[in-house]
Amino acid sequence: MEDGYYVGRRWEDLDTDILVKIFQSFDILELTSGIAHVCSAWRMACCDPLLWKTLDLSMMKSNFIKIPLEPYVYVDGRSDKILTRLLKISMSLSRGNITTLIFHFNLFVSDEQLTYTAERCPQLRRLVLPAWNRIKKTGICKAIRAWKDLESLTMPGIANPPYLMEEISKNCKNFRELKIMGPCDKFFASTLATFLPTLKVLSLRCSMLYKEALIIVLDSLPHLEVLNISHCLLIEVLPPPGPKKVVSEIDQSIIEKASRLREFLTCMNDSCTMCQRTKIDEGLMRWYRYEEGLWKADEVSSLAL
Image 1 (cartoon, rainbow, N blue to C red):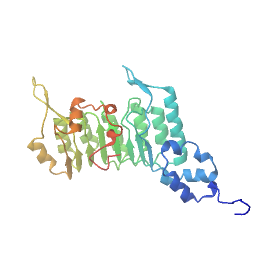
Image 2: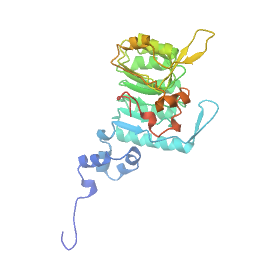
Image 3: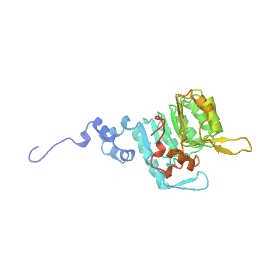
Image 4: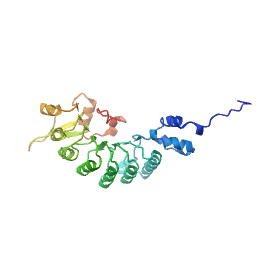
């Protein structure tokens, strides 16, 4: 320092490693806010693969209203533009390095947004996409074909699962774990047995689960190691003209079938808050009613967020 004048290092002269360390503390909104345009050094740091292993959009929600016809939600145009802009910037900066992609359960992605992202995330291994209202069969199938390395999927329950499971079976040879955030019936379980017989981890927590579907899962997925049915509403369909009934505890025959698993995670306790909530919601969880982020939980550590 001389005559009160100090010459120090400028921000753009910081080592890239130091900049990357600083940028690792930013969330996705901060990281895509324009800091990459400050200078070439900052842009280089913003593109570092360490920042882009995971694209976490679980803090973003669509501005939407429910409607009575498909896709049952209408998303505000401005909300869509914000997401599209964020995805484009993220895809540009990440340079194909994203391996985990997480969407909020109230972030309603369109076909165009999904396929645009899929084409630019060829190394994706894990996808968390709980809301498919605006995604059509062609859109999700095109995305799955782009994700040859996909290993893990969190998805909603869907009425016609064979097309999806067949696409995964054909294209994702390392696929090993699945979380379904929605009902699992005999048809869904049979589809898993047909197309994903090598599945190792399955979570059905906080959902309506039919007893006959559970038996199919235990009998027909020989490679299954971990099964989570915690807080499920277990339904047994009685012979006609008998009604459906809620099963209050797991019977011995199912326990014996599950004994081959490394982990069989259950909770059917009337004093358990999550079990109570599943019953109140009749096996179709209304996550918006509860604590923010509760939907991310899972007793299987590899599926929790």
